[in-house]
Image (cartoon, rainbow, N blue to C red):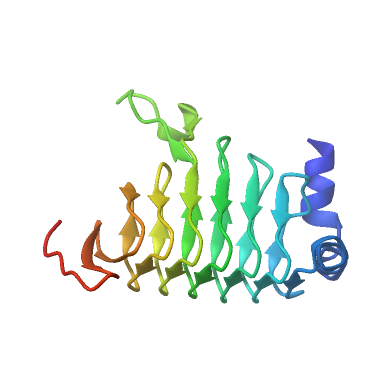
Length: 181
């Protein structure tokens, strides 16, 4: 617990940016809040913009090569973690989380019931539009585009364009159209 507090609050952000640059070649803004954690790994060529928060104390966060996170994103893995493939483009103010409250008991506050985690998997060459939310248990296949402000809450196949809350397939990237899938 003490190590977590020291890593989170006492290590300067510029030192964390330098650490991840030297170790992985990741370019992290000193204005980002990226946790210094053995659970966090970057592929080469990753960028993390200002005011993005990445927490990896509760579970593994594995990020592939050449992934970019725009301003204001929030990435937080639960116990089962988050795995992101190569070439992710993550628009501003997007959220990826693999943790959820347990809420089975009506007479007990959700915070007092603990957390669950199924994990999140995001494939290669995925574009998350601005304001996209990816919830625990979600899987995005390779070559997927998610339209801005969409909610991802289940498994989706590769090569599709998703839109909505919850997201639905609006187009297949091979040229076919789907309405209301």
